[in-house]
Length: 231
Image 1 (tube, rainbow, N blue to C red):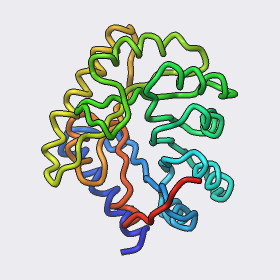
Image 2: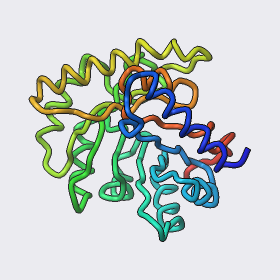
Image 3: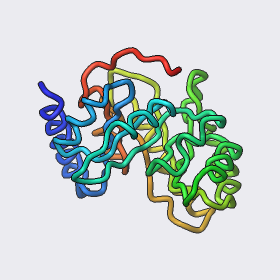
Image 4: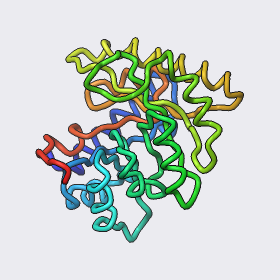
């Protein structure tokens, strides 16, 4: 299948999952994870209708933004990987959403570097995996309170990535826990946190059932990922 065909199939699957969950497809943003894929693949997906693209590496993001320009409409870029503070300048103010902020220091650096208000999400490692970034569910509320006081960034919600599994249902407890944590933090902050970024190629249907507003899908759209090491 071509990228355009895979995009159409995933888009239809997301819409069907929304319908089964009693939600409108417009409630879920499909982020096409284009990390390590060439600019030509992004152009093909954009031509098929994709408008939101996720990148994991700051330098790769900057290069692709310069190379991929859609004359028909503006593309929305999302930074979904772990971000080093010394590379915040490559991301701040240049993406629609930073999905994986995990410290007050990173939030402050993004605020410092952004020319305009930068929407961000708090990355929560609910499974406690040592190989993944993110704060714990216990420390997330206090960190959210501190980040909410930083000018020039706006905390819009939470993101998570459950442990890998061949069974999509294995992700459900993590997704439900993130939704509950989001609701708790929103109550403590006294304002909505509308975004839940959760769900990937193998479990996005379960994520949608659990309230995901952003699903991050790469392989199902672009195929196998080529190996790339950030320079």
